[in-house]
Amino acid sequence: MTPAAAQTNVAVVEDHPLFRAVLVDVLRQTADLRVVAAGASIDELEPLDERPVDVVLFDLHVPGKAGAEGVRYLTDRGKAVLVVSAFADRDDVLDAIAAGASGYLTKDSDGPDLVRAVRDVAAGRSHVCPTLAGYFIHDDGRRRPRGERREAHDLTEREREVLGLLASGETDQEIASMLGISVRTVRSHLDRIRAKTGRRRRAELTRLAVESGCDPPTETS
Image (tube, rainbow, N blue to C red; front, side, top):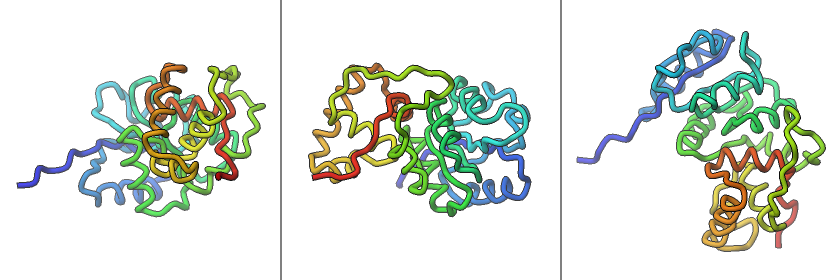
């Protein structure tokens, strides 16, 4: 007998009752995702530390703890955060990622996009919907989310390209294809980046890319 797939416990923080109900309904129709809490604010879900939550779907514009502050509050408690927001302001996106969000979806994403994003984030991968990936390309590095200092870490140009593509939501295989190198080489670059920076998870590397102004290449050979 094939073993049952492990379930991912999901919480939803969304202050619009109808859209919250839609999110919950989509998740409940997916066998490997289980909704364990839903509310209009982080405060309604407290105490978070006592809930078995793997991923939090978080609207940035909710009462109480909101925006990057809310993201940081959730990640500080060990919860992976997938932002789902109607507003795709570049500063909001970059600040949310810099605060530790593992993914960002706009509310015009469909059900399969949502499910795929939750699974990516639950697996420790980053997920940024294609309509927002350009924010990383066009960020010139002059902004510093919440006053954070730019970190160079002595990365090579190739390492910065790999890091920028990772932050745009590309998989190791996709990065290899875009740069014309092998998957093994991509992973070697990522291992060196981790050794240089001390950042281990993809969400942490995505945040590093934002802090460091690492842009994915606009052209590849």
